[in-house]
Structure formats: C-alpha cells, structure tokens
Length: 335
Image (cartoon, rainbow, N blue to C red; front, top):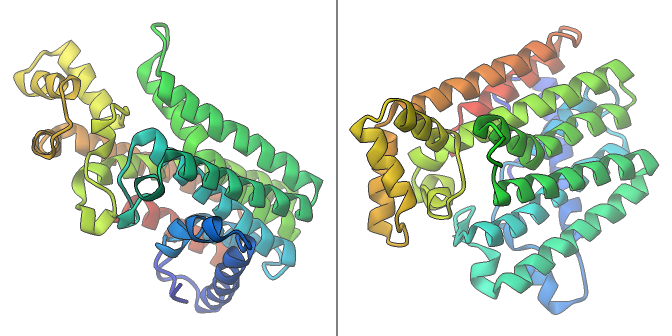
C-alpha cells in the first residue's frame, strides 16, 4: 500500500506522516494475521486483501487514536482487527449478493464457489477474534457486539421490512448494523486503546455510527454512477439481486404517491428479470436520470454534516480537522 493518504487529503503534515507510518505497519500486520500453513486458505484469505482497498476502517482507528497515543501496540492490533472483520464480511456479502467482482477482480465465490468463500470469511473472523482476545476483554466484548450487529444487519436486509415497518427506517437500520457498526467500533477502539478520555471515546463511537450511514448512502449513489473500472463492481448489481437502496426506495414512494410514468417504469423494471446485462444497463440509465439520485446524494451529505457536528465536541486542532477532511472524502468519493 502506498504511504500517501488518499482518504484524508490536506491534513496536518506531521499527523499525516505519523498516520502513513502506522498504515505501513498495519499493512504488514494484516498479512501476518492471515498467515497459515494451509495451502488453500493461504490464497483465498489474501485474495481481497491483495486486491487493495482504501483501508478506511484502520484509518479511522488511527485518527481516533491520535487523540491519545497512536503508537501503542494495541492500537495497531485494533486497526488490523477491524479490517480483518470488514474483509471477512465482504466474502459473505458477495455470496449473499451473488456479486461476480469485488475491488476490480473476481470475487472469491466466483473463483472458488460459495462454500469456500463463506469458510474463508469464517477463517478471517476467527483470526480477528484471536486479535481481540490479545487486546483484552473490552475489545472482545465490543468486537462481539459488532459481529452480532453485522449478522443482524445482513439478516434484516435479506428478510426485508415487515408490513408494519417503515421501509426507510428499516433501510437506515440495516445500514447502521451492516456498515456503521464497524466504523463505530473503529472510532471507539482507537480512542479507548490510545488512552484518550472516556468522553472522546463516546464521541468517536457516535461519529462512527453517523459517518457509516453517510458512507453507505454515498455508496448507493456510486453503485449507479460509477463504472466497473472505477468502482471494481458492476454498476447496479444490487438492483439485479433485489437489494433495496435509497434511490429505489425514493422512486417506489414517488410511484405510489404520484404514479408518474418515469417512476412507474423504473418500479416495473425493478420487479422484472434483470439477468441480462442489457436490461440492467437500461434500468441503471433510468435511475441515473431520476431525481432520486440527487436526493440520495443530498441525504448522504446531510448525514455527513451531522457527523461533523458531533466532532465539534472534540478539542479544536489537527485531529479534528483531519476527521472533518476524512468525512468529506468518504461522501464525495468517486470510487
């Protein structure tokens, strides 16, 4: 991984250098954490790790830890812990979503089948759990709570809202569990293990929860706007699998309330067969022209603004400024 900081632009030079140095160490520790004598798992467990990634969660651990002592060994372990947990969830998500690509390469289940992909994800979860035990009982507890939320978020997404549930509230709760919970863990662990104050730890947990939702809403926009070359995923893949996104929820509500031809056509196509690339591309094109895309972008930005407001509880300085830039980079990214 490069020592540059693409996720956190224009931050204090001294802080940037410290974070870059720690990220290099974390990259090496990630590979050490999955080292095994098993010939099969040696390749499958490193597949997505070697494909790259922005290391958003380790970055957040480090920025939170900058509120205390970032160089502590347990902080590095925590950064590896959250990234291993994230990678494990990707193996499982790609099976659930039948995704054929991830990070610009073939997904694990496309290469080796569903069983191997699921078991590789389990292997990474096991290695992450071993790390949490090395850090201490509080890390074990927080990691277990997060793992539970990851499972519940995937389950609730799969089952969908009940007739009594508000679909928008249900969707945000899924985002909170599937994405925000791990960013909240990253923020809290970074602060706690660095020796930062209890107040700072609480701020970073609440910030992580909020920015996690904003991050995923921005991803809903990217899923439609970006190309396979820039995102590493097929545009609209969630549509093919019937996975709800904020733009589709907005279009469905408009179709029910107003019944305009454009919205109705999108809803009809969402309910149809999207197995062909041509049909999927047509639906993606319709959604790109729909105001729901800009509405989702605006909601992502508003949620990010709410996250920045939480950061106002931290002392003014380089760390808070870096976290504000970090927030902007997550919701305004193009890949």
